[in-house]
Length: 287
Image (cartoon, rainbow, N blue to C red; front, side):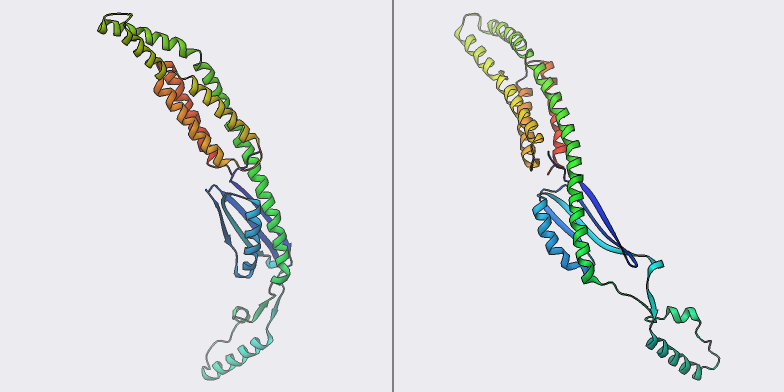
């Protein structure tokens, strides 16, 4: 089944004092474009993740974010005794000079840089957890892209079915439209040339019949529609192949319209082009 280039997945892991987070999202792009937004402590994750993503995905702009949030209720904080004593000494020196100065309050002391120490995260120990989260998030992204791809496949197949109906509607109209137009052309040529049996009339009508014959175009439309349905139902990369098929379908629809000898067939050609454009919009998001 085809896959979309749009998807999102996020993973979290609770740790002492907070939560680890990893997010990955992707949007459509002609190529595989990887963007990593990691803090400096997690930079060494980038290269292995780049290699993993290159194996798992072929197209799309993929953005990865990693970080953590702090749970203040679980933070293990301590006072730095050395800094506290230094602050006490400095305060005493200031008060010895400025007799009327106000002493530091408890809040002032706690706000002083470095007095309160928060236990640092053990990044080497956390890296394996981030790697596991990243692998799970990538799998979640692939599943999201596959689900979106299934939805796109349904939309495309609905439109190819509508196009088949239009092609089937056009086929029986062509002979009658050609004959009616040929009769008018014959009458006009007789009026100008003066003889219904003139060789020039037969040549002109033959050339006209060739120029307005759309049997090949209708046949190729059906062949291309079959190929679209096959590609949509198959596994693997399909976006570029489908984009090429949309170009081919559009070419045949244009030719059908230019060769049309009736307003009804011209209308069918226009409806075909509208459906092709709708499919093309969906195809731009397929991997």
